[in-house]
Amino acid sequence: QVQLVESGGGSVQAGGSLRLSCVASKYTYASACKGWFRQAPGQEREAVAAINREGLVSYGDSVKGRFTVSQDKAKTTLYLQMDDLKPEDSGMYYCAADCGIMLGGSWFSPGAWSIIRDWGQGTQVSVSS
Image (cartoon, rainbow, N blue to C red; front, top):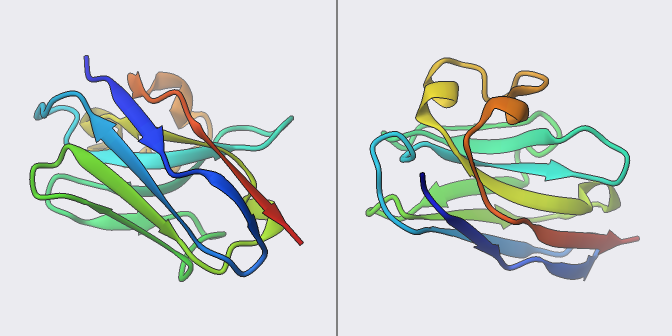
């Protein structure tokens, strides 16, 4: 199992930017696929972005064109650059890792979060209008 630690959350005004980071305790083949989820109070956890071992990225429809996911060459640090933030982007952002789920095409499926194995503790993002 891999330990994941997020950082970089904070409070910004609409239109602003934040950069989230997620550091993994070690590299494993199974956890080299990583991504971000977010959860607002009373809402289902939703997938935001994902990147696989080969660097192929994908995004949820609500963040396309505004968010950019990347990871370092060692595949132990994941980033999420968030630009043009909107109030509806507010929530707890979680880093997750699971190549089985991602390569199986389920990362953005409803409820996928419930079967992903490795999670961080989350970092809060608040966007004011």
